Amino acid sequence: MKRFTFFFLILSVALTALTAQETHIIFIGNSITQGVILEEPHTTSPPAQTMAWLAAESDLPFSYSNCGVSGRTTVNFLPAKAAEFSKVVEAADAAQAKGARLLFSVMLGTNDSAIKGPLGAPVHPEQYQTNMKTIADALLERYPGAMILLHRPIWYSPNTHNNSTYLREGLERLNSYLPVLKRLEEEYMVTHPAQLFLGDTLAYNHFREKSELYFAEEGQAGTFSLHPNETGAKELGVFWGKAIRDRLTREPLFTEYPLNTVKEKPLVDEDPKKGLLAPSLRVYLPEAGKATGRMVIALPGGGYRNLMVFYEGFDWADYFLSKGIAFGVLKYRMPEGDHSLPLADVQAAFNLVKEHASVWKVNPQEIGIMGSSAGGHLASTFATHAPVVERPAFQILLYPVITMDPALTHPGSRRNLLGENPSQELTDRFSNELRVDGDTPPAFIIFAADDKIVPPANGLHFAEAMVRHKRPVTFLLYPSGDHGFGNYDTFPYKKQFFLELDRWLEGL
Image (cartoon, rainbow, N blue to C red; front, side, top):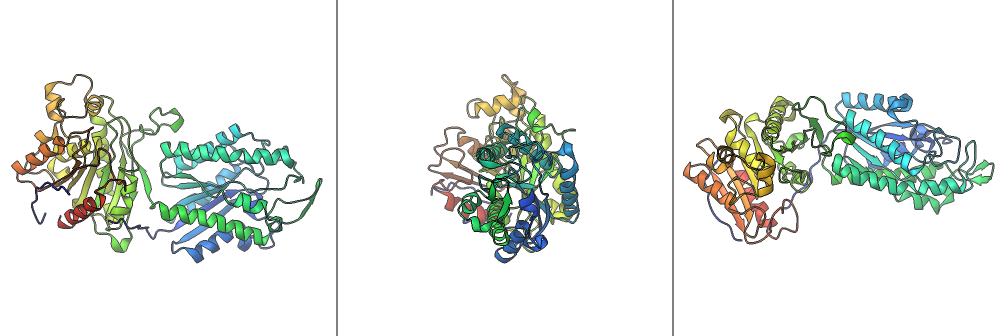
């Protein structure tokens, strides 16, 4: 630390950084995805057209596999059925072996909606949701860092009737699938944050209004529209390409690593904690040429009851990546009175980073920790309780719970961590202002004066202890902002906050 500061402030832009790692897109679908009837589907199918558009409109490196198969439904891609799912796994395994990140682009539902013909049809909305969820869960279980985009199936004419029967009843069923896809996105926002999204929804109306984008096919109820022609395939590829590009440029790329503190990861449906029984570290890496060797591991808050993984976790990735700092977000277990659980997950996360340090271009001596609210208590616990050689290089504490003193602590965090009536010995042990010593890592602490959840005195007492032990500390106190401002643009002092954090990181 180049300078020692202790002051009150009464008083950033975060650049988007994407790694240059290749993204391999696996297209899952039926005859539309396969590109049937097209003369040269290898170059003119919707997936091929998607890749052509991405090559022209994005600087990101891509490759792809087309796993679309004519006549297939969600039933065909269920893991238990093996046949089509195994082809997806084969393609994904091969791409992952080459170091690519995986993105699954899925458009299933056209054949599911048929009155009869394809396997499982008609697939009603409830079963469609179950099938799509089963497929998604299997993919995310096997490929923890993957991303899934679920595209709305495009329109077909209400007189569609070839070897299978669709007609108006089928089209109405097809429309019932869109709310299902929206519900799945909402559900996975909780269980698998930032991994499953609703993809393209605009192509449906576009194709509905333009019959010239389809082959004119003769069927049992007259000439019908079902399969895009070469022009239609190109336009569908643009819709898919935009959805993929927009999602990837909106979300920094990451890889999710399960931690070894639990022997078996419970299935999400069997996990009442919605994933919190399965600790993991989500890792974002800067471009190789920008990497400084430094890394920050973030611990979101939530009162030791749940985790605010977005604004106190994932939303910070852009900020650190823009500075060449690798970034990790720890999903730690809730203690429910067993205070050893979250701390064990923090230790495991640091061990994981050190094991991969050379590959990730991280200096093991430059791994810092960041914690918000109860996550700030956990961060300061690790920074003051761990053996000196295991402690982080620095700590960034946002409106942290520090003390377990009933007069100043956050009651819910204290109760969830230590139980209803902890002993004085246990209370003192986890009052981290009492644990500061001559080896405590440099600290950056920020509070809003009007914080009604965690009194700013938590940070002040920690800062005072740092001063007594002659340890570097910066304490910021802004007039307003309340509790939990995280990375929100609505925090009135965000610009000043980021400038001070910039300056502090540069001075380390």
